[in-house]
Image 1 (cartoon, chains in turn red, cyan):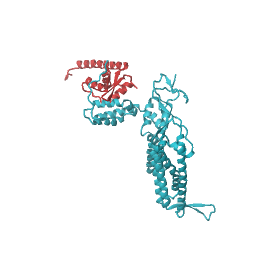
Image 2 (tube, helix red, strand yellow):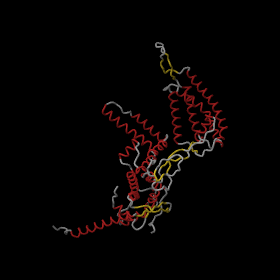
Image 3 (cartoon, helix red, strand yellow):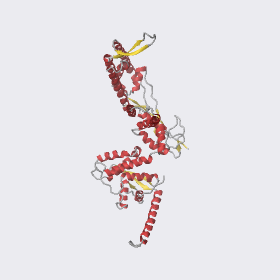
Length: 111
Length: 400
């Protein structure tokens, strides 16, 4: 089954790019990266982690118990790192093309 | 590189955990076992301090995520139909789903209804095409539903055990991983005599008392009337009980006398043989199962119903006397065994041991281990596959 890179999946991969994080850390980092536009719920996050794990892009890398709560940490795999890099390049190219289109468009009201 | 924990708030009300576990049931059982604690921890972290339950948005998100997980792991429709209706084995990637299905509370009902769903469309089609009334009446469907619900309590574990062997156990040449179900000999469980005998005495008492009441009150009996016009022919006619009441009472009294003799014999045998019972290394004792309690209650209810029908004349006196006689034969022995098993010498007796001693007059043998399926303990070597395995083989898989 092919993996469909959604915006939420991309943000989760991006949140793990600099260091391993547990679920709550991922939710906070995604909120920060999206400037508050994306707030992941727990069900959504674990659905994404299941899909990303199934595609070999993230993997658990340890756990700890804090205040009686289990925290499992996740990190990017090489596949995941390559996927987030490729998606970032795609978005950068898209941004460049979009900027070019917006710069060269005729002035509003023109014929 | 140090993992980031970010800012973690203090946990809310403990009742919040119960709310989380309730809604987390949207996820498959195996998923909850593996990651439930982690998900619960995240939900506690995300909740506002002082929260007593999940808010509506979190509930919707959780239920949607749980059902999406179930959907991802669910076999395709064709495979699922073959599995459910024809008991065909699922491909390996769906075995975890099958394990959840088999362990589920409603498994037996699902299987029974699947079998029914094969028959009903056939009957509907025949009725529509042929015009003949083939569908059973609604009252029959209610009885069918009640029977199916009862089947969930009676022998459900046996049905599951069979299904695990068919669906989950790796077959010859299939890969083995940690947790794969492989044949194993494990200690079997038996109900302790102490926990079973009170229920047995209760059931026998209900049946015996009902039959005694029936014998004295039932108004009708089945008469055999010879046909004078046709030599050798007879008719069965329902009529007043008359002198047959005495016959019923005499049968019950004889059964009681026989039971008293059996009771004395049972007491002596238990006293003589209980200290000769061998150690049972392959068996452990447990309390009577829920299934045993349900079966006892069902039989008690059936005996009471039979007595009611005989006393009100809806049924002729007969079956109640037969069951009552059997109960009166067994009741004194069961009562004496119950008194005996409450003592310190009978702490290790199983229900089967008491039956063996009472009926055969010899000490029971050593129970054998039970052949079953058990999860394979790790680590399992890479490339391990299920091979032909004999009873004396070590519990390690073949590698190839």
